[in-house]
Structure formats: C-alpha cells, structure tokens
Image 1: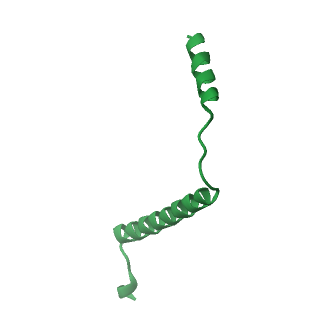
Image 2 (image 1 turned 180 degrees about the vertical axis):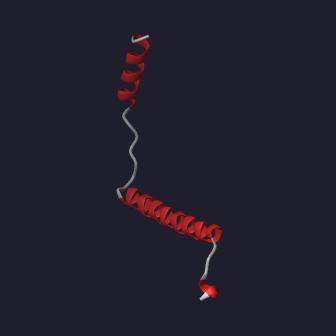
Image 3 (image 1 turned 120 degrees about the vertical axis):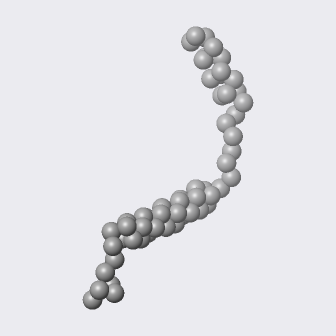
Length: 59
C-alpha cells in the first residue's frame, strides 16, 4: 500500500499538469472553431475614418 502513496507536492504537480493539458486542448479547440468561421474581413475604411474623426472631436 505504501508504493501508491503520493506526497502532497507530487499530487499538486500532477493536478497542475492535468489542468494545463485541459487548458491547452481547450485553446486548440477554440482556435479551430474560430478558424472554421472563414476569412476575416477587415472593417471598411469609411467606418474607421468616421470613428477616428469622432474621437478627435470628443477631445
């Protein structure tokens, strides 16, 4: 029974490793889902110019 005994630091390391792997896999799944949506299309220049002009007049 003593060979299965794990001290606290090893248990924390294993739990941290499992959480790290879950976060990594979750990140990869999220990136794949976002990439699946298609090409990213930038905002029209007229919209950006309008926002820039509005921010200058607000100052």
